[in-house]
Length: 76
Image (cartoon, rainbow, N blue to C red; front, top):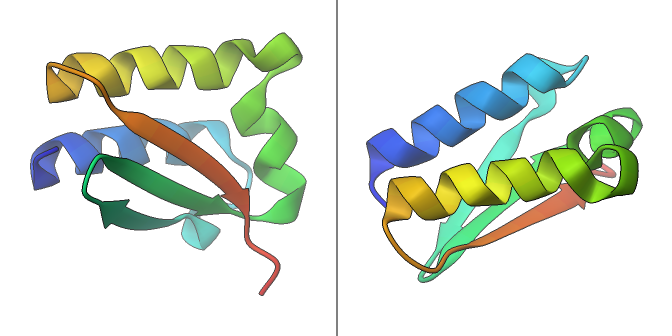
């Protein structure tokens, strides 16, 4: 995934969370790991996982292929 696509994905996630400054991203070979504030984890996942499913769909479209999006509660 290109840097621009990752920035777009992070922009979407920062628009959802209450603590946008706490959003961190680690890119790896076939995906991205996004760290969010513990209180924002539920907001990013959404009811029945609908929000994270939509984010994964956007990520796959930006990547034009398979892509792994992992949401992690940042306990730091």
